[in-house]
Amino acid sequence: MEKADPRVVVITGGSKGIGRAVAMKFSGENARIIIVHYDPDNAASDETMKILSEKGVESESHRLDVSDFSSVKGFFEDLISRLERVDVLVNNAGITRDRLLMRMTEEDWDAVLRVNLKSVFNCTVAVNRYMIKQRRGRIVNISSVVGLMGNAGQANYAASKAGIIGFTKSVAREVAPRGVTVNAVAPGFIDTEMTAGLPEKVKEAFMGQIPLGRIGKPEDVAEAVYWLCSEAASYITGQVIQVNGGMYM
Image 1 (cartoon, helix red, strand yellow):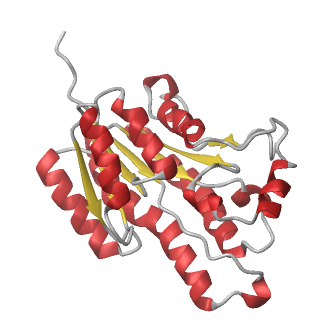
Image 2 (spheres, rainbow, N blue to C red):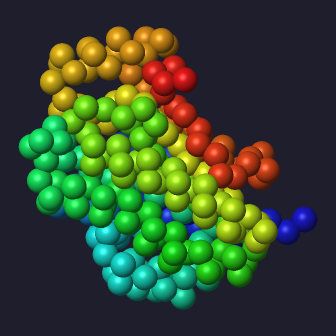
């Protein structure tokens, strides 16, 4: 039997945290991994590339503002002209600008919605036509438990993550007849750079809400993402898989 070509996997926000863990998980099948990031420097992405290289994985890293429609469109056009395919898209890029609503600025709101939600639209639109044409594809959007339950001081973040869920379900209905699945993963309190800077009292409060009694690891989320992109999940689309230790049921 002829061996299938390696899958081309694009991961936004892929230089560290959950994105890096997802890249490591896909490295096990020797996929061709494309990391997209917007870090101020390349330190984290260089480290991720180093790890993937040591595993013998063919990979690329690109600095890209995923909130900019034209930049994303040009990036994917170039990528597909070179590689002729995109099999998996993981929309993981995200930021926070936490403030109580009474102190939240328009810039706080716009920045979070632009990076967290508009980027999902930008990247999905960019690969949609190609996945439909090849009649296969997996799209996984990273939402959050906050998008399901809300959280004081995160109205912008919660709105962006709830928006991802509605977007996921709608697009899943559109592309299902063409063999493309679209799902979301909603992590809970995960040990990443984004959560590491939280005050200890906030961390303790979160821990008190987790029945399993531990903070999640990026690898916990990566397992769910990878499964949704596997053949085992080929009959699953438009779903939200919660990875939160029971924090929200």
